[in-house]
Amino acid sequence: METVPYKSVAQLSTDGPTRVGPFLICANGFWVSRGKRSPVSRDQVEAAKTVLAQFRRTRMVQPNDCLAAGPLKHNVESLAGRYISRGALIIAAIEMGITVMPVYDEDRLYLSEDGRGLEPLISTAYIGINYRDVERAVKAV
Image (tube, rainbow, N blue to C red; front, side, top):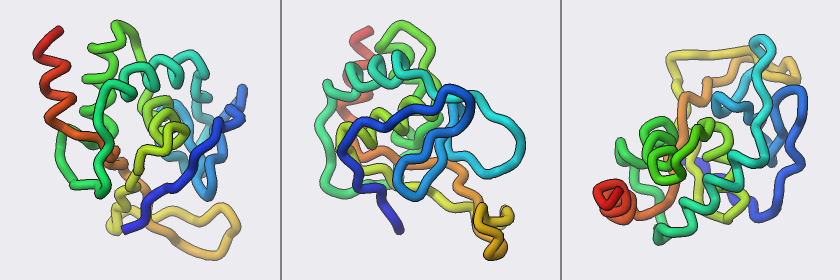
C-alpha cells in the first residue's frame, strides 16, 4: 500500500483541484478528471490542522473505519465547530506530515491523466492518527 510522504504547504488552486505530489485533490477528496470540482479552501485546511494537532500520530496506518477520510472529516468538523471538506482534511494531514494512505478501488477504473490507460480510482484514504484520541475528543464535546 502506498502512503503519501509530503511535508510542506500546498499551493492551493483557486479554480479546481490542487496537485500534491502525484495526486490531484479537490474539496471532495482525491480527484480524477471527470468534470469540474470545487477547490480546497485554505481556511478549512488550517481549521483541520488545528484539530489534527491534538492527536497523536501513528507510525503505521491501520485501516479503521473512524480513520477513513469521510468519517474522520465529520469528527474533525464537530471538534472545529465548522464545515471542513474531505479534501481539506487530506491536505491538512499531508501538510502536517501525517501519513495518508490512499485506498484504491480496483473495481472502478478511470482513464489516466496522461492517457497511458486505465487506473484504479482512489475511493478514500486512511489518516495515520490515533483513533482513541479522536474518540476521546469527540466524547468530550
